Image (tube, rainbow over all chains, first blue to last red):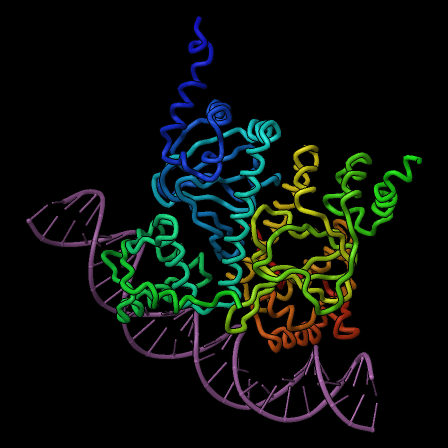
Length: 243
Length: 243
DNA sequence: CGCAACCTTGATGGCCATCAACCCTTGTGG
DNA sequence: CCACAAGGGTTGATGGCCATCAAGGTTGCG
């Protein structure tokens, strides 16, 4: 019996993790080989089909997820059907790392997605064992909070046009490389999703896209594939920053 | 030299903490005597006068604060003067426990307030030393996030009246005892603050207060002191909950 | 008393939601 | 291959909610 045979998953999973598209994610990138090995031992991969739910509002938080591929929308629904999308997740993003008992949002796949599932208890143990992991987790929490504060400001104080403009700039940054926003954006989400994220209606979002098009600020290749033609102008429309 | 003389602050501060009005706060209540002693050793109290700032957007996060008495508003300001209040803090609430380098909001005192200041590094050490503290901190973070998600839903999908109604119910719960909302509410914040929190204008907030008054749902003793006369009705106006 | 800050109430207008129709793409089956 | 249906996106007409502008009331303080 070699060590390899004793703990096959750990080794295989570690390789899996090293080759994982989400290897550069906030959490995983902050881990050394040793920590990653322990994390990998607890990971199981799975898929979610487009349109299906990963989490339903009210679910117990017994698992933690890492998005490997695809796009996930976090949302909240009211009894009369109003929906608010709280955020969009992509490769490398985590779900469920905050310490509450229940999820206060649903998570739906915008397209066929692959994820990594961890048992929450195992993760908690790792966090207590490795201080570096704790810091990473809290850093991710802070980052998620900052994003949420941006959204609050948008919803509370920006006009429809400003919201759409900042949304596009946000996407450009996330899809680009650091400090170098991509000028070519893939919209994984529908107009309805964008509207429900920005507190608007489908029609308003569509109208603003059209307006930006006629202003030569963006170009729509297809409905989900757009180019930013004039980034400075787009930024000036979104602008509404620190005093 | 007695032990008491060697470490006067620890002992005095521990007593200070035990008698602290914020002793029941989320963090402190989760600590045992030993942990509290260490925390107390690192605390310094100070005051902020009404209208003065505790934190300015962009400040380095070198300190952590605990509100002992008074009310604090966290807000964000845009270059053209639009303001969004992100939250109101009272006795027992913490500021700065998320791990980011800078504050992305300002903190202003709504009235004369007393606070407890901790050096961030010390707190970090304690968190690494005592796992119970880490859990408390992450639990507080989750709670803050949940509140923010509520606000996002309000701003994105609720009408002005629904926002004001849920705001009042939220206050009633915070000022009451657990599961027993207070029917007598003290509004530490001005109409302008409420408006900037709910993404509305002063006039709209005032109008809705008046409407709720004529509907016999609330009664205004003074501008900052109101009674909820018909809680169920108020809840039905705010309602817009889980599907 | 007088002033300033805050709050309330009224009149008007604009932004965005709503309602409605049409277009475009995609997929399915005859 | 084409007809058709269905879902998503665009565009137009109308209206309502809430912002804006304006004036007056109330409170509190020197």
